[in-house]
Amino acid sequence: MESEKVTGFQSIAENVGQFNLTGKTVLMPEMSRAGTHLLAAVFRGFGIKAKVMETYKGLDLGKEYTSGKECYPCQVTLGDILYFIKKEKERLKDNFNAKDYLYFMPEAEGPCRFGMYNKYQRIVLDSFPGLEKLKIGSISSENSYDFTGMIEQDRVKNLRKAAFLSVVVADIIERLLWRIRPYEKETGTADAFIEKSIYLIGDAFESYVAKKEVEKILDVLDDVIREGKMIIDPSAPPRPMIGIVGEIYLRNHVHANQDLIRVLESYGAEVVNASTAEWVNYIAYSGLRDAAIKFRLSLKQLKIGSSWEFCKKIIGFGKEFYYQQYIQKKCYRRARAIIDISEDHKIAHLEKILKEKDLFSFDIGTEACLSIPGIVSYAQDGYNGIVNVYPFGCMPGTITSSIAKPLISTRQIPYMDTAYDESFQPGRETEIRTFMYQAYQHFKRHGRKRH
Image (cartoon, rainbow, N blue to C red):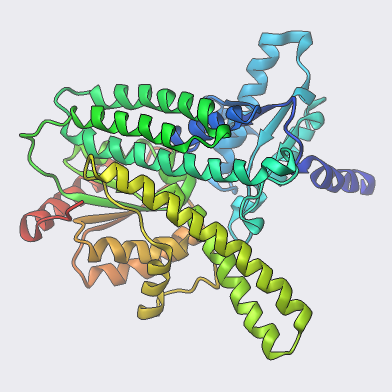
């Protein structure tokens, strides 16, 4: 029994991490449809064979190999990889070789259970004969999602920059969808257009990103936005604005959140979801912030060696964060010159909100650092309602709710918590209808946010 435990720990240490992707088929679980497909296109542009797996078809498998105590996204993503392997074995039969694949599952440090997904999923994969050879590739928030070891060292920085660009572009595509779909002239036009556009822009990433021809990618994005704008019916009246915050996977995965944005739209909303880039910016900002705190402490203690090391980290994280701010500002400026989509939250502004109102602290970490001030920011900006999305039993989501509910009630803005697992709650639609009625009353009294 003891030897089995050691073997299990060895497998996690040896088969989860940053491995060379050359010659592997990199399997990506879908989170946001646009974001995951564009990231896969970036990988292919750098010569890495990347594939986005079908999602939510293997949920029964994910539930079979979990206890129900795990975070819901862990069940969904585990089901995705098990379903893919099942279908791949059926397709290839004796030619299937687990060593040909690498399952891409990033992680985050801190108390969120996301940091344990790949470890637990490693244990599950090891329970199937032969699948111990399928490695799990992981990048971590601890090193700001660095790709060192996964590609040639001289291309690591370029890959990371390209990956961030894909995140920002995907955010803009999704904001375009949420901007045009509530006002489309013909039902279904916006969805079909965006689906086509994801692959069009993906082709641009695949063709140009490794050559650093960013302008060509953004030119394609501009054309997509111009065409998308034509879908809007100019005579359609404005709708109440609803802002979404919460756990990053669940608020982006339309199957896991039971297509919440579309449901809200069906009851008269225009919705803006917190972006994926917000989280990536937060990681770089936190690295810079933490390095600066430790640098000052080392100086006080006259630890010159440590001070120099933290100084180098400040420079590294600082360059990374300011590059991200630059590329995001550039992309949104171009997009907003064509159509009035909502801008993204600024991380420093979100921390300022927390400090001014003494609500929470970046020292604690987790997405609550973004969700709590994000709610306040939505309220200040004139949104007509706010929704907090999180997995059932999620600690950061529960913390956000406990702080946000009394805070937002004083502003008399409709607020709704939506905790999800695999079940369909019979009262959820009634709750959403009631929420949207309140949001519409707020809209009639106060108007709405301008993009």
